[in-house]
Image (cartoon, rainbow, N blue to C red):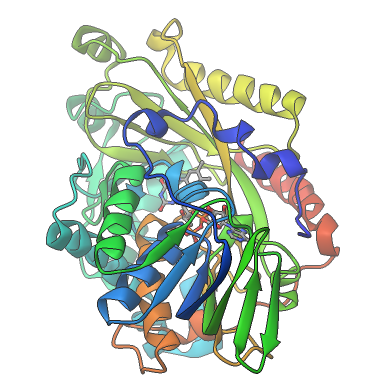
Length: 442
Ligand SMILES: Cc1cc2nc3c(=O)[nH]c(=O)nc-3n(C[C@H](O)[C@H](O)[C@H](O)COP(=O)(O)OP(=O)(O)OC[C@H]3O[C@@H](n4cnc5c(N)ncnc54)[C@H](O)[C@@H]3O)c2cc1C
């Protein structure tokens, strides 16, 4: 497989100390062996692939869901659990210019629909996801950003039709979100969850509907043959007329060739503390259940978990090896200590990292794979895929059945991303961007 980061970034090491692994066991699944014929084969068992499998199996199709490692191995089983707006970084100005105002409105409505879709799946399937938080709170890291919240509040109403609440620093302290913040804005859409429990609940529902799930089955080739596509793994193959690529940040540039340089994998890192007593929470002034993030370009995202641990995430490194991981782990702990100084002595036994994907369109891509009739892909959630990837799985399931989807499906999602320059060295484009944007933020 032709990948962008060092091989270890795709192995077990980055996820060894992930907190979520202690909260829900992944069912053991066999590897593909021999030949299996299905209607639709899905490559990648994260939110995108699991959701597509659930919808396809519910529609009565024969489905095989394959993961190179095991279901939820990728970003799905190791994210921050913010089930929120987002999925892209495209601005309203760019949407207006490229697709027109109606499409801009549809795009923003789709972000809301994705959160509602996650809520509805959790409710309908009765998945216990340890939910908390009423929407999400943005915290200003400087006075300028706090001042801009007034216009942001108007944009939130225009884009999402809801009233966002402004908070002064005093309000934040009263709400249990005290810190070196200059103000806050709460958008009342979204909630926090245990991502592994959500994904495994959906996986179990897909299996109940008859989806066949395979672990340790990396698809190394997709060959078009008269009998259908042959998706080749180490010990067998799946034959299917249609297939879905759901590999997002864990994609390979040759799986299939069409994917080459169309996505930018980016590392993100998380720490989780030991449980923090109520007394120590009040000492720091953070006792809210609200999920929050700051306004930096390379933002910090954080929330108190239902068992009083604290989860804190930020960008990851530009390469992957033991040394770079140690450096990022040190940096994330440094930023955590700076923002929550009363908790400097609280241990963070859990540190992990994973890959998200960006697209040049700044929007997710959901649609056909050119040159592969019956082949579809969904990727590029820009670090916000809990709601969006599980939503995209629904669209992909419709496309793979040759149906016109009933989900809101904006034109920006159908715009196949152009390739990034520098091919497999493209991650080095991130270094100057990180430097430039953080220089402006001081
Ligand atoms: C540290 C971190 C924190 C995050 N926090 C949040 C958050 O709080 N809120 C939010 O909305 N989003 C968050 N995200 C992003 C979110 O997790 C992802 O957007 C989402 O999980 C993507 O789901 P996916 O199914 O498309 O891909 P993934 O979950 O990454 O799954 C891809 C799967 O494909 C498999 N695969 C790859 N190649 C092959 C192959 N050739 N054959 C078979 N299988 C293959 C991999 O093993 C992997 O399991 C975070 C991500 C990270 C890494």
